[in-house]
Image 1 (tube, helix red, strand yellow):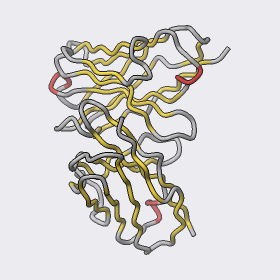
Image 2 (cartoon, rainbow over the protein chains, first blue to last red):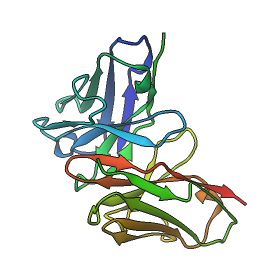
Image 3 (tube, chains in turn brown, green):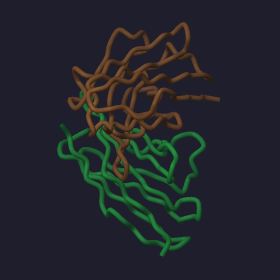
Length: 119
Length: 107
């Protein structure tokens, strides 16, 4: 059974940093691209970033480019998101998501971790 | 960026009703469209991928169709467990965009 468990969320001041982690199990982690998707309160989901199975390729939404860094440790089946220069508009539930057999959809999602950016 | 527009935003229906949700893309996305169901406090759940492929374990009352810029999600006979919010999502050139959602409410 595929399981994705996020951690690291919390309250942070504007301009601050936070590192999210996602522990994966139930599939061959290194064989699949992984992504972070966020959802602000009352809004639809927003794709944030994607990393290839090897970690060699990364992609970012324009809204986070230059501030967020996605990474993975295939030896530990763990995905990370380093978030710097946080803004109020980054407040959201952040989901770790496994990318499907093609890269066009997300077939498994974690339960999410809440990030609140506020003074 | 490709924009996704869903209609309606809210839909009131009864158990047993046939429900159709529409999603329009601002430019052609071939068949790279997925549909998700989300219940309050939970993560989205994949229902349909590649416009019309049913995800394993999803009831057959859910179906998807369309290509290019116009897509539909159909629930053939609405069940009590189907009251939720539904999102479409497109893929194009390493960018993924979701619609604003359609909330299916009890009539």
